Image (cartoon, rainbow, N blue to C red):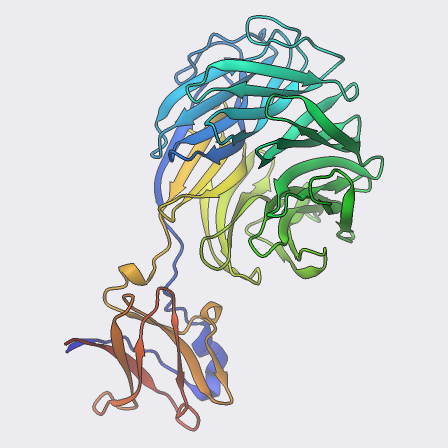
Length: 485
């Protein structure tokens, strides 16, 4: 019989102190690798998608001219940008890249893949037709959607003139017949439904109340969740009727400070989780703020809402993903202009912050996408001014969280985030061990005499334990033993 010892001190007289001690199973994940994708000068990432092959598609804008990772010569002049898409393998190494656009301002903001392997990119274009763009400019800055094959060949692009100054901020594939594109047009949020060949099915403006839509995501019933902000700078979330552009409901988050909705994920339970930031003037000067997240059910009712301060100064939650297990992972930035840091944060199902991992963004930088990989690890896409002074696309891979499969020896945890507490029926804590292995948990008060009080078979996540004899003891220590045949 294998014996693994982990002592956890429980003092009933100072239970708050005991529970604050974190012998946690799930720890902040470690950074595995990071890649800096260099164009010519200023390269800003805006969106990402993990493809069915496991490859990673990244989109954004890039300055004119080639760079270390940018093979296209560029179509803009010295002061104008091009649209840039880079596809990497699962380890972040570039497979191919494509530069598109014309002599004026062009850029991509989001990317999605179709069932046939083609890629759709949404963004903006002020350029007329030319070598890097098929469609003519309509007026000012147009909504621009581009289709490429799986090797990056330019198949078609369409410009949509909804106003004078507009951009496609986000897109998602609804089903085999519809793609949704959302953004801003002359200070009005809009939603555009197109077919996979770019033909318009329907469109809707939600202004002047809604100033911009930052994210659109498809729900299981083919309805759409939208996230953005109102003309009064309030975080705004809405859901359309299935297959339609008319709204079934909308929600506005009341706040004493300007609050922007910046990203959103449609949840498996039919609800949505929106994130962003609330900003206000700092007493020390400059701008301060907190990250904001709100979870809504399928009917638009608030399940929970939270504010987060991951570091000093302005905090923004810029990307969020629902995990394969319980909870969420989010990324964003904090700090003052010119001195910013990135963070990756793990949240429980109720939004409680479980851990955060902070890494540098250099002088400038921002996250824009958070994704979970098939291996359970996490990807964070952003832009960073390190290691050079110019801006590069910054892709970071984090390891999966420690789970029971890696727990050898097993772990006992008094972490409150795993539900540990002193209840009327005893002291609650957690056991983490290898899946389907059996463990005996024992208590002692003198380290000489051990008394078994429960036998459990470990599950993939934590297994809840209760010691009903915890009351009336000055302190108890615990250990767990693996039962072997």
